[in-house]
Amino acid sequence: MLTDRRLNRNILSALNKYSNAVLNTFTPRGQPQRSRCMNAFQYDAHQIKEQARLIRRHVIRLNADSPAGGHTGADLSETDILATLYFRILNTGPE
Image 1 (cartoon, rainbow, N blue to C red):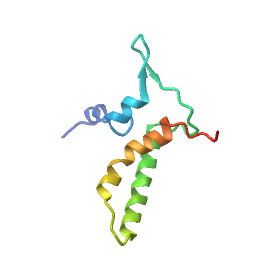
Image 2 (cartoon, one colour):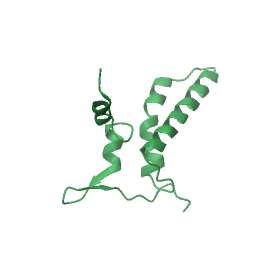
Image 3 (tube, rainbow, N blue to C red):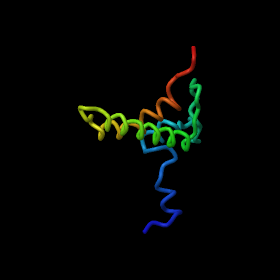
């Protein structure tokens, strides 16, 4: 069984290793620096994780009510990436 300390070290701050790499950039001196975005939301990792969870619930409801069924696996697997892009990376401001 993993200890809490080891488990926390293995869990990335965002949702997966790809969104963590996108959220953190490095200066020429190698010191971590948050990327600067023109996003109106600027959610932190916890808020993005919560939004992704809500999106997953909505996707499941939509697919359950659909007569065709839908392909839930692909929809659920991309929610982490899309939530990170929309709520942190992309320029989603009003202008």
